[in-house]
Length: 490
Image (cartoon, rainbow, N blue to C red; front, side, top):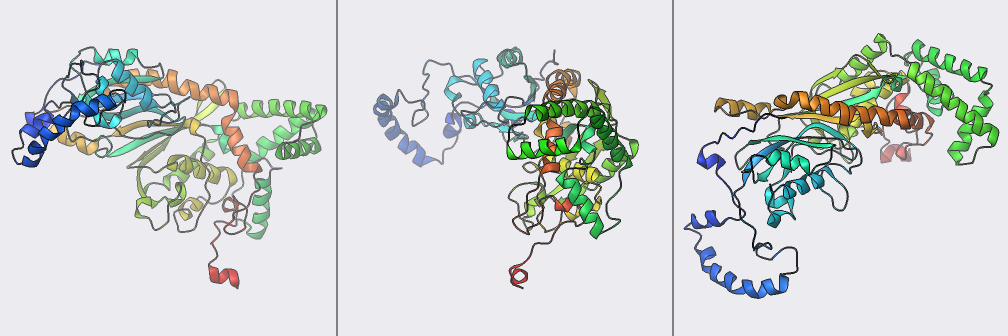
């Protein structure tokens, strides 16, 4: 059970009850003479228009379509919630797609926290979310603010009774009418879980490994050696050879998969056996402390203010909104779940752009696993365009939004801060059952991260801008400068 909801109220002008219309405000505004003059005309036309529009979902002037519904006072609140994003097309309402907000709003209406007259539009309740999450992304903690009918002492329990198990409404705090949970949010903390085999180097026979090897000949001494990774692939190749699978067979399998050609029976059997060997080898892998510290050093480069135009879509280097500030980044020690080793990465930043975290994770991981200089991350903050892929959505979750500045003001006047601390035990249990366990299970079933990095290692496409391989920036050649029109002519 969550703690009892705090019912302390602020001064009348700050936390006064708000109603479904602006009738009170209109009466208190004697200067609005034009509005009062027009009121009679509006009333005169209402009956006629209502006859025409009575079967339409909304009425033109806001007259309740549920005329018998009792009008109840609403209060502006900040709501705490957690959810698992699996099976949802993101958080934000987007009919007819299944979204977190869609299910949440539906539960509010069914529980009587939102009137039926306001049940068709989020804007009528002043709905806002602190952070928007994309398709498949989870939230251990998120905040939404809106006007709710909260006179029922059991409203929290009623709302939860209409929510699926993967969405949990923890409670709320009263806030003033102008509160916007997104605008007053000081920063946000995200967590990213990934199996440690993600940091293994590309398979020696892959196109990316070949590019790295070729570039090292041009710029010797640039690429870091990875004895740990070399040993891993030597052991895997020895197991494949022991199983009677030749490198020629593996090459034929790769070619057939790339061209979409059906495998012959012998190759199909060899493919199945090789996958079994690879899966077992990845599960046995344990990251070394040296490589883990290398990852930590790579992620430290993101700290502070930087131009993240390459870490989102459609941002120009000169766009000032591409500057983002990272406050803190931590990497956990490895943990083993179902015989698979994982690490947790937490990123605390003021704000984030679309896909930014997934691209930050991908860039740091790729730099570690390919052996290119860590400084390549810093170079990606520069003006040259870099095609950084998005790491899988599977491992990403919003830990919580942080209201540091706003809470300082609340505590100054004796009000409760906006914090998930009071629900910490329940949230930890929810994370384990509804988020972590599902991430682990999906990876074990589908090998999501292996598929992602395997695709990158086997990709042989070229950049249309400069004619170089897409992932050339991960080799000793580095980030290629785009040619100007003059240079192209010459």
